[in-house]
Image (cartoon, rainbow, N blue to C red; front, side, top):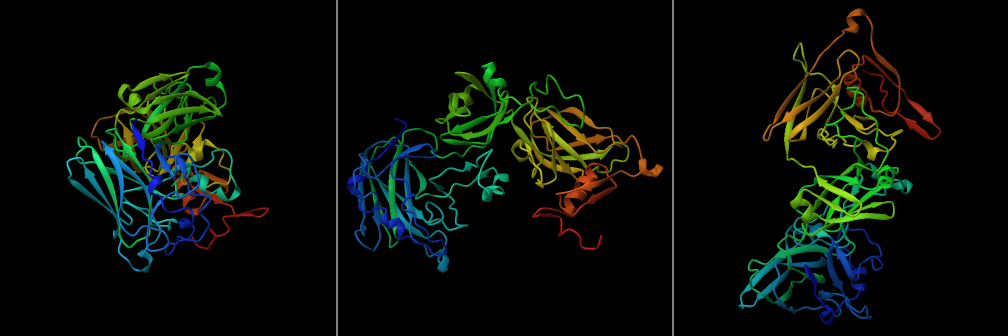
Amino acid sequence: MDYEPIDLSTLCNASLEVFQDAKPAGASVYNVTAEVPTGAQFFHGLPFQIGPPDASPGPLFIGFGASGALHRSPVLVEINRPARYIVFAHTLLESRLFDGGPVGEEVFRYRIHLEDSSVVEAPVRERFEVGTFPFAFGQKPFLCVSDTKNYLFERYEGSWDRAGWRHAEVQWGQPRGYYIYPWENPAPEKAIRSIELVPTDSQFIVAGITLSHLEEYPLVRSTRRPVRIDLLDDTAATAPFNLDVDVDRGVAAFPHSLPSQPFEKSAPQLPGYGAPLNPGSSPAYTWIAANPSATVRVRQGEQELGRANWGQLDAQGAVEASGLRLEIVDPGKNWVHVQVADADTGLPVPCRVAFHSPEGVPYPPHGHHAPLFSNLDTWNNDVGGDVRLGQITYAYIDGACQGWLPHGRVLVDLACGFEYQPVRKWVEIEPGQQRLTLLIQKTADMPAERWFSGDTHVHFLSAVGSLTEARGEGLNVVNLLQSQWGHLFSNTEEFTGRS
């Protein structure tokens, strides 16, 4: 058993009502008793037992405080087995922060007794090893996490009031009841005899304790990595795109299509003007951060296509699982400062630019999108100086940008209107390289001949965004129109009567 939940039911003395009365200063009041998870649970893919294993009625938590039947003195939890980590599910039900109290005040303490009679102290401090419940906005703790993982919004549907949130794609998981804090055993060769729960004068709940027998840190600390997904069944591969990726002990971004043929084999033929969008489900890619023991599952609609162990995938680089193949396409990366300059004058050239790995994985400049708005339609969405042409999303820049670029061959695609020759070429990014200069050749000077380019009918951009994109497209004039579409008013606040 890699993770082992401990049965605490014989020590429990508090029920759900203890949460209902909780209200740290500054937090909203709402009924939480129906939301607090109990029974057999998985938090971040780790098993916990909250309350009796047989779901019999009775107390569910070990509660400490000055009211009712809550404990006021230490409680001893017998363990008598080894563990590399002890993972606590606990929460603080009051706070002095909003009354001027200090950050980092000790509100509880775990005293771990080892088999050789030595004792290791593990203090629990507010905003570090524990947070408050209900969650107070802006009070995210530093050394523990919510019992709910970060999650993706619904991709193709959702309520109207979440429409703006869907631009973010991901939301931080707020606690439904607890915070998860892993404690590392400094002497894993020694069995843990017991855990002493030592209260202060704060109202504190211990909901679950789980032992880890793995060397991995229980919570994900690794960076995200790009993973290519190939569906081996032709019917599934050519079906309209509808993939999802789940990781139990980790996180995954939305998957997106890759070009039907890798750019390495078949670079698009029109430099600066995008590439045909792959409407199928394969090949595709996503970004994953996970623990070695994590399981990666790929679904198409409601059907699971296959699953793989992340540790095995990380060690081998690629695995085949049922009807799919997963491959980590991560050669390493550098943070690179890019300059785009006129080939004749050396001056910066505002333009739009895109960077891709040979497989077609996008590496956008910092602050720009990879797939624009999840590759969905973007009518009436100002998406921050980016534009998608088929398979390729371009970032508008002022002649300079910075961001991550992968080691090895990188496909650069850049354009600036009709007076510069568009560029699509391969560049080599060496390990440790921090600078990249790209040259673009001007082939015409139309204003010198008294011809001026412009876009006379533009909606849904800000004035500053319009100016940025105009420069990137080599335009001399942009007419940004105010408009009324029923009850939708656009750009009415942009006109000031001044330049």
